[in-house]
Length: 185
View 1 (cartoon, one colour):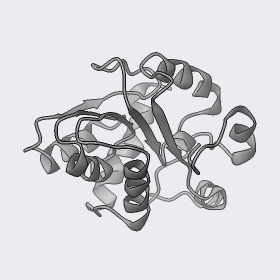
View 2 (cartoon, rainbow, N blue to C red):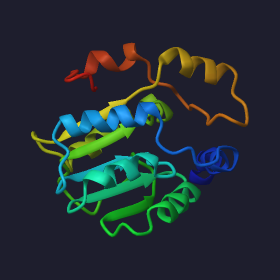
View 3 (cartoon, one colour):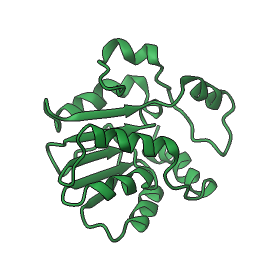
């Protein structure tokens, strides 16, 4: 499948879902990062930034550090850039998270919030090998996976209002290979 075919539903998503801002889930995840040590000078890689709702929260705290925000959809990246145009410490890039090579080479935090379930399981190994090249033993990789039952519902009832889930990760497919810490995967 070509990159444009894969990213088209994500481009279309922005047209069917007006900017919603930060919801309760994103605010909760932001607070958790704060508890885990997010600071003004932190370096953060946000894989799957969408239209920048979580990026906007990160930017409230990360004022002297760097945020690299990546999304597959060029249209979403353009919306994020527009929303955060005044921020000079955010680099937005339209790219595939699995293949992305960041500008910074050592991040304090890497986030994949409601993203990994959209990446085929067959590419998870490549994704985590790539992430390991720009993290160290002090880095924190934060993964949030939506309710697995909701993922199944969306997959079964996919409509124009839902982004496709290509090959959903389930807790049983990931938990055996990952360590859980502080309620993040």
